Length: 124
Image 1 (tube, rainbow, N blue to C red):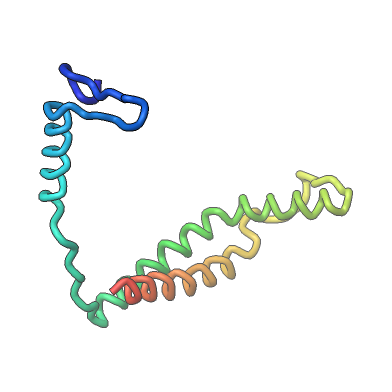
Image 2 (cartoon, rainbow, N blue to C red):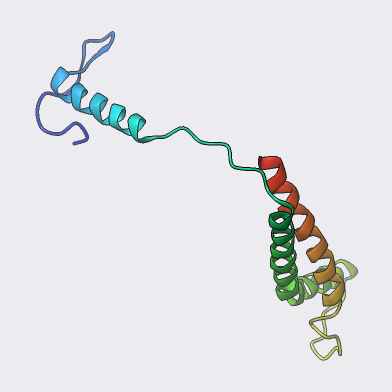
């Protein structure tokens, strides 16, 4: 089905023989795909303004992600700690699901700022 209608490859016990009709179509398709690929150009150097914007984008993205996932991480950590201690988690505990979100978001912002800028700089 891949080669289309017509002669099919045959095996003589030692090697495969491909009919020129089918093989020619495959070879031409391969050649045209290779021709369509242009060489990759090295991007231009980043300006300081672009690096600042990348850092700000990284800070916002990482801080928002960590702040949004903080309640899930907090409940998971509390459940693991309770299971290790042999206790049960009490739903009536007066613990905010956003406990420590400020520190988590601040660390995420610092991490996002550095990783976005460093990654893009090293890619060039």
